[in-house]
Length: 204
Ligand SMILES: Nc1ncnc2c1ncn2[C@@H]1O[C@H](COP(=O)(O)OP(=O)(O)OP(=O)(O)O)[C@@H](O)[C@H]1O
Ligand SMILES: [Mg+2]
Image (cartoon, rainbow, N blue to C red; front, side):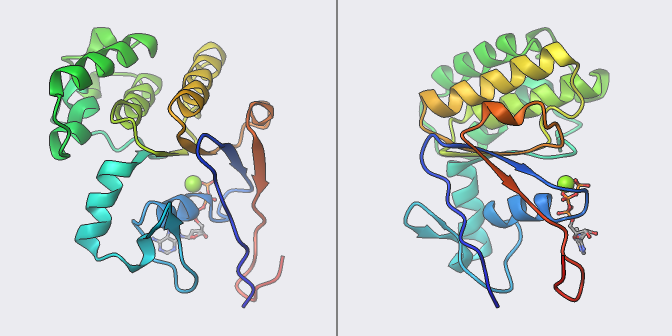
């Protein structure tokens, strides 16, 4: 079987585009170590994540990867602030005060600081989406994986959110993979990967 090679360098920003159902979310879940491939290997730096145990994979994901899910996946019974800080609570970061200040600065940048103590259910879809992005960025992961992170945003917030993600990637040398259906946005990325639908017989 031919398995194409895919690479993302430090600080490189890549847009992933393609029709619904072609496997974009599946691809992000594979890179995050949430799913295991039936063939091939995935390395993040020198770590072969496809050979890690479930526990080691979860620990690696927590410390190295920021995930922005298509359905946000905020924890409904935690406040927005606790959601944003959750990766740092679960991880081994030492200076919680520094992380909290950074997280609040991000929340201000993303326009959701007023909702810090609110529960996610009281936020609009777009505000929840921005909270999910803050959560992923606040832990300063080496790799950011974002599944349609601007899908629920108005044009102004869309542009601002994308700009914040792209500048974070460049400033902190994070790899950034963004799934998007929004072809107007892709010019801002270093590279664009087009996924194609393949049927069950392996044909395009
Ligand atoms: N857990 C699962 N079990 C079985 N099949 C799945 C599962 N998740 C996704 N699929 C199938 O895999 C294919 C790819 O799904 P995926 O969610 O990766 O698509 P996508 O490109 O992200 O689509 P969209 O743009 O609509 O989000 C689809 O045909 C889907 O039905
Ligand atoms: Mg998807």
